[in-house]
Amino acid sequence: MKKIVLSILCLFTVVLTYAQQEFHVFPENHSETPGTQIGNGSLQNPWDLQTALSQKSKVVNGGDTIWLHKGIYNGRFSSTLNSTIEDKYITVSAYKDDKVVLNGNVESSQDQTLNVRSTRVIFQNFEVTWLGEFTRQIDRNGGITKFVAGVNHLSGKNCKFINLMIYNNPGLGFGSWKHTGGTLIANCIVFNNGALSSDGKGRGEGFYVQNNSDTETRILKDNIIFNNYYKGIEVWSASKHATSEWVKNISLDNNVIFNSGLPSNYRTVDNIIVATDDREGINIAENITVKNNILYHNTNFKKNEVNGDAASLTIGFHKKAPVENVVVENNIIIGRNNAFRILYANSLTVTNNTVYTGYVHLFSLNTERWNFDNNQYYTKKSKAFRRSNTENYNIKNWNSQFNLDANSQWKPIKEFDLDPVLDITENTYKPNTFRVVLFNKNNEDIIVDFSKYGLKEGTNFIIRDVENYDEVLRTGRIDGMSQISFPMTLNGGNPNKTLNNFGVFLIEFQEDETTEAQKDGFFKKFFRFLGF
Image (cartoon, rainbow, N blue to C red; front, side, top):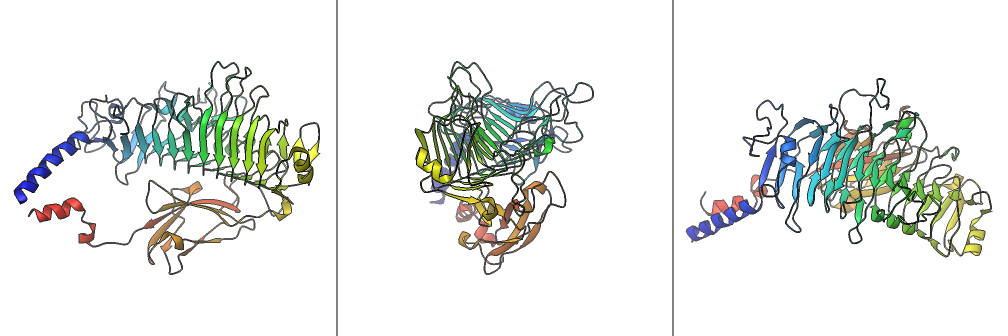
């Protein structure tokens, strides 16, 4: 019996090995097993990173994994990996819990640290950055001569970018361009990207997003985006004379975006903008969903601050390209003057949002295909809706004249408050890790209840502040009540950090130790059955 089973197992192993291969990559300067161009991708003879990313589909294909081992990979890299197998992905990932860093601070003509021209590839669990000293000034006289992005996905469909940290690149954080339909970008942390142009203004968005696919939706979900030199997410095209559509079918879901523009010393700017600058009326931003996002700019709520321009969400830009079928649902939108701006929109749904702003700024009113309801507005004056150079409306007039916001409420900004726990999201791709977003207008510490997540009493936890990720903020064990206290007074005067009324944290729970027998998986138990 055992001989028969062993024969079947051997056959199964051969098939599995053929179908799913694992390859290994090490830095070129690794002391023991340096990655090389002439390697074969084995653990004993690994590839360097660029060689791995250049493999043809006859060598690396869907179902295969390329493991990046611990270290700093100096260079600017280009991926041309492609899976030719429908519904199967090539995975490029850090090995286990290894810290893998792609460092683009090298001499190169390439305009991004990682250039992706791939189809059905998952990139996950590594960092993309510039290390060491470099200026943020675009200036041929002693500065950098051009902006350099973190990641540019230029072509190829159905890729996934998961659990990446993209930071300190002197340009755009992540470009997700028009020929890359079906892309998923999830659970990434994108911050402090950008530089100063020659006129001193900040440039470098967290995300620049387009999509020309009629059938595949671009999804940005569960990301944390902050302190980039320019806007947080631009769903956008700057082309003024388009001949086709390429800003459509995009979903922004459950992202946390704050203090966009803050490091540039210029001005705070939109956390999200959805629009195009097309003058031909062809490239219209359409079928865009903005839901469940938390948008924040530093604001002193105890002083009812709304002065100064701090936009959080802008819909539409040019009058010849009014947006179509944009849905803004269940978001928290916090800024100061112009926190929520509607410039030009043909069809627009705005429901179940909480808005803190000087006023809702309206450039034009084309309300026949607008649906506004169940929103909560906090503004400085009762005439919350300001139409440029014409008339202002209070909530009653707004409803009666335009049949909008019948079930919405308006309150003065002094009454503004939120539940202290704005969001707890478990990382789909990293078990036992949660994103926690907290708010307290009085800067008081917050107790968070984790009882519904089934954590055992005594489970260890580690808390990190995303703005100071490399340092552990707090450790401890779950008590019988499953309640954990988070500190809020973390800003000691840093102008580029959130105020003490708002915080974004990552908490990781470490599972209880198990016995060796419990750790044994199917194959270990099976081999014991065979007598090995």
